[in-house]
Length: 368
Image (cartoon, rainbow, N blue to C red; front, side, top):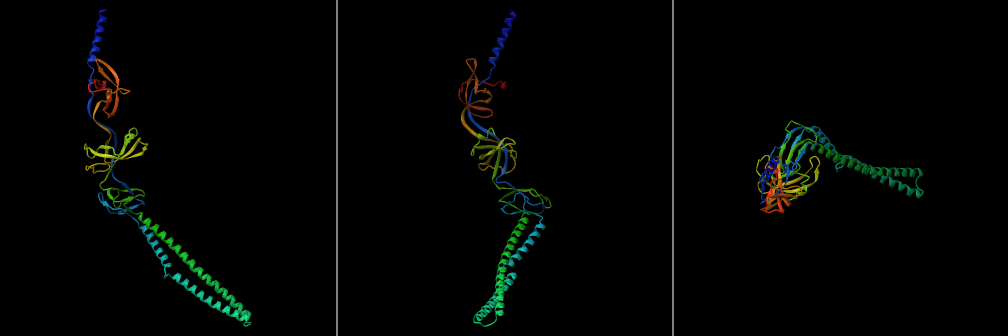
């Protein structure tokens, strides 16, 4: 009996010590900021890559990294002997076709002369035929002479008609030939332009990917260009958080290139399509103020500020139980009570109701 009483005393002592060792905290007033984590990189605004349209070898490199360029400015020249030869031949054909339809065209001059000669012959044969016909009506002349004159008149009429048709048909054919020559010349010029790599817009050259003498494949990237001073922060946000992100929200970020320096930015666009590969959405932001990051393609870690509140009543998140309740010490007893949660971060949560600054909240056992 004494042994049993002794064991009960030990158990009671342990329980009393356990209660006395419970750690509690009081809710505190402080500023709290709710954020969404995002990662990404800094891009040059309106950044784009220029691709080679035709294969070959670089024979001219006309700009370098850091150069400010204009739209249409020549960046690279790829070897182009064959397309140059085709363009020269197309130019010759075009000039010849243009000459053939000009006012001094030898072809058209000959046809005009033939048409005038046919007109003169028709006029003479026509007068001869009607003169003999009038005489025949007066019973003067012979029937054979009249028949010959009529036949010659009709032949002249057909020759006149044929000469005119040939003239206008030739003009039409020559114009078609000219249009075909223009088309061939434009095609040859376009082929040659494919060997001339040009800038598509104003900006700064950030990277030249080929050197003089290097081979280039069709559709291979050769130049990276973007706006000279403007930067775009391209972020990826988890699909579970994207509904919290809106244009205009503040972004606090750090880059790998500048260490712990904090930059301010703001969200300017939220894209609606999810990247299925990593289950994220694209969000674009731009730097605000005068403190802008000069480098591009450096990695970024960012927090997008969703909500913030000053002088909020907060407790550690780990003290909150399932179902939004907490354990408190009340009159020496431990009990669970419901609370209403407001803004929360990874570490702290705002308490809207259920607790006050005098409440003794039981700390999570993971703290011990």
